Amino acid sequence: MSNPKKSQPSEPVLLRADADGVCTLTLNRPAARNALSRDLIDALQAELDAIAADKSVRVVVIAGAPPAFCAGHDMREIRANPTRAYYEKTFAASSQIMKTVTRLPQPVIARVDGIATAAGCQLVASCDLAVASENARFATPGVHIGLFCSTPMVPISRKIGRKAMMEMLLLGEMVEAGEAQRLGLINRVVPQAELDATVAGMAAKIAAKSPLTLEIGKQAFYAQLDMPIEDAYSYCSAVMARNMMAHDAKEGIDAFIEKRKPKWEGR
Image (cartoon, rainbow, N blue to C red; front, side, top):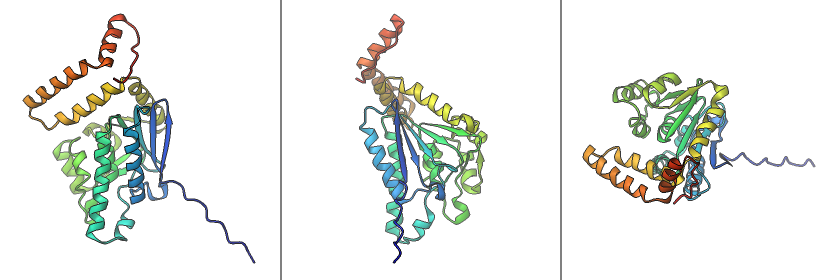
């Protein structure tokens, strides 16, 4: 009687690595181009929630296992559950991921290699910064399959101009990395061989700053965006006054005057 083969444990859909205050989350469904299955959405939400309360994490990097960053939602999984309740729950959970990224106390950098389409492009736009290789391409291609990229357009339309956004939505065509940078969707484009070093260098520079200052500033940045200018100035003036009362602000100013390196305490 032959022994049945033991089933091999499946790879986790999300990988986490921490080093020197930088937490890297890697979407790990390479065969599906890192499409957002419900398992991946839930895993990503759980990690982000944990990171929000983790003072040892100064910067978050979101990456995708080669050969893609993220191809959007897992359409095979979605079509296998054809109920409105499932659709609403899935898109709400995905939207919560994007809002969590924006609201996270730590800055978040998207490391983009390969395609970032639909909800994948949405994730890039939701991150505070984005660095892409020359191989990266971006699209909101839902119109090709009869599904307008309505949720992806929320953060993307807040990063690029309206005409460019409508072109991406109505044509659904791929946007090369250089054009994505010109439009304001991403910060930098580098050769693929330099992508990791560029992201690591950017993350290290941010991680060296006061975590309290970064948290205050990130929150204020997004809060003031949609305010009328008078309200924005009033709000940000109050934020700066509150920031000035923090230990790290006093320490940073004293260190600047005394020409020494500041010692951050996160308070």
